[in-house]
Length: 301
Image (cartoon, rainbow, N blue to C red; front, side, top):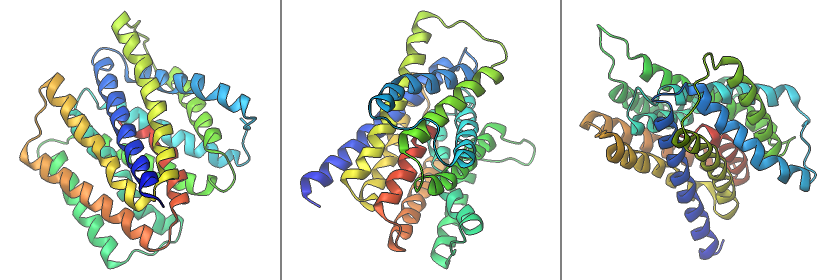
């Protein structure tokens, strides 16, 4: 791998993280008045508009081969995205971004059950420490349940189920086919669950279209970053989404993380990077990471 290719991969990942943070900030802005499902609809529908012409031009199949797993991946991804957008107006943007990254931790646990992967002592320590980090962010109290924080964790859990499905799909179906299924299921699902539709104002409409555009482009940038650079090198830069989200939250909503959220976030990020590197050392290839993590990018916020 040349230095130039490595540098290109890192740059693409940072740009992807920046665009994901734009998506999250715009989603937070729109969901302060509009239903979260309206934001989910635009996130998914704009993606359909962007990728469908490319698929037609390059003769990429829309139907796919493993339809059952494609639907499971799409439905769990839809639930993860919906929960993520739902809590945006209830939690600081940086906390939502950090909780979103717990999907890496849930994958490590679920892989032991569904993929029969071994959980060694090092991995167990990473998972326990990361769990401590989530507790510091959620801050549970004996007299009150932090529902938004728990929903943030649930979002990470459903994203992990989507990840597990992708590990099977990358052997049978194209990245674009997976994204098409997810976008189609999310578009239909958001219409079904939207409840009361509130017409957006012109600035809100622009923000809705923008979050769909930024989310789609960020997903593509993330995927291509893995084509240039090994996952073990580029993965840590995906956590710059948290830094960008913290910046937008502080600038536009006055959200300043307290010391416990900062400590919890650092624990989750450190353990997440550790788990990624541990899996890499166990022999999981960069190509697997490219297809798995790149396809899961729609859940970043």
